[in-house]
Length: 626
Image (cartoon, rainbow, N blue to C red; front, side, top):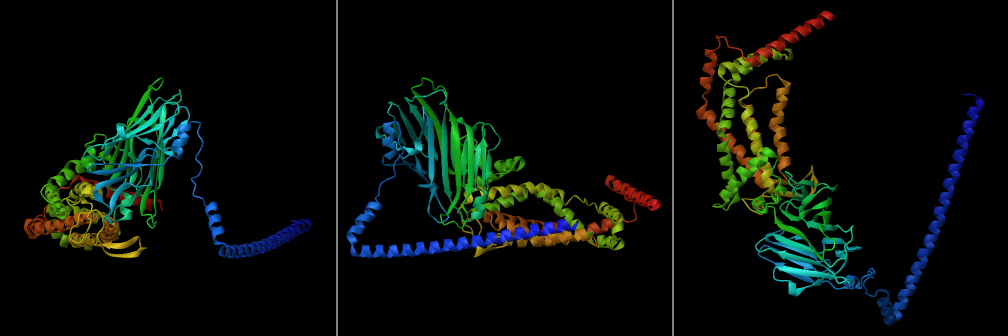
């Protein structure tokens, strides 16, 4: 770079620095000037406030009149419609009508002709308050009818029709200047959680493009359970496509939204144990859903905001004097048998697992649970009997596992000799061969302890899915647990530490029992000098109980109680098999008797030797290349 270029760059740099310095000074001057203006305005405002206060003190009557005029309680002007009757309906005062049976109390409002609140009578919230699935002032259900212009029912107050109503039915109408009207009739079924609705369009001026009705359903669901984290994890928005295997969903503690243009039969705002379901017998032709969860610390104590925008198709409307569009609602508990009785696949909102797990839960766990509940009221005892029954069913598989483990314990001195004989990592193949030969002499299968345990995993997972979703356990006490569907905190604190603000006693006891069970199982084997085996033992002994404690600490105490019972029964079975079923001296004698006899090699051993030979050949070839 020559001298002129350098001088040019220096000049450019100086000019830019000067420009930025000038700009910063100008900005500073403007800020100072604005601060002066603000201070003058504040002083003038304060002076005006003082003068106003003095005037109010000297003229109290005039001040009262001025306040009444400036704050006159007049409703905001409603939109002006071409239909004079709609103008009147937009300004009319709303009324409330209540329908009730032995399960539900539904309050309807003529404003939008919609449900205002829904209370489920058989249940209470965790705080022992009435359980409102739909809250007053936090629910909105409306229809947009195109005949020919859009009429949004949420904006108008309908007329209550007492002569068409009854103790179980409420009828509301929105008359139109043309002589037609929109009618909404709701019927609360006897001894049921169901409400049927018929949206009737009578004498409407339908156009060719008026072949549908838009449906908008928004609801804010309140918190009803003890544990916020567990409740959000099992709350979601479901939507079901006709003849599908299970509903799709969004939520489970996360904000989400979906949009579809294909047919949808029903959708559900599902809290952990209760659901508000809306079904269109003729199917919705369009769907747009969204869900958002309210933060735990929010003072409203709400759980989630759900929204559904649907479209219901109208058929044969040209020239029709009356068009009826039916809808069905379910406001009630997520009871498997209760939902299944509707024959609309409502029961699929309950998360029971996949194909294998779901089948086991539906046809074994739930029938067994219901059968025991017919004669036993205490759910803690029911869980105990269920655990014993399941352990008896899987005992043939468990026996092979425990028997294999007991034999491994008897072979521990022989394993220690093999580990001492082959301490180096490069002798791992030889050590494995001798170990397999030892197992062969003793009649022990290396997979005898693993395979039976793997076969029991579906049962453990089925119970993991069943307990948190079982409404039968909701608010059922046992021992120190006041609610088997929630965590049983013995210690709690305000702030979250490592994601925890409490300690669940059943979860802690389960983790302790898991630690001792792992301790017992590890006493039957030796890791020798294998660092990988030692690491696996350490993880099984310490990491797994700690991890399970953190997982179960926020979950159902009934689930932790079941795992605790399962671990205790397993340890008892292991002790019995060791003590009276498997004789260690017999196993040792069998090994010693076969010590000087050739052991036939299994196919697995033959493959192992072939792999060892190939490894040696590869090492020799590498040595030659060097």
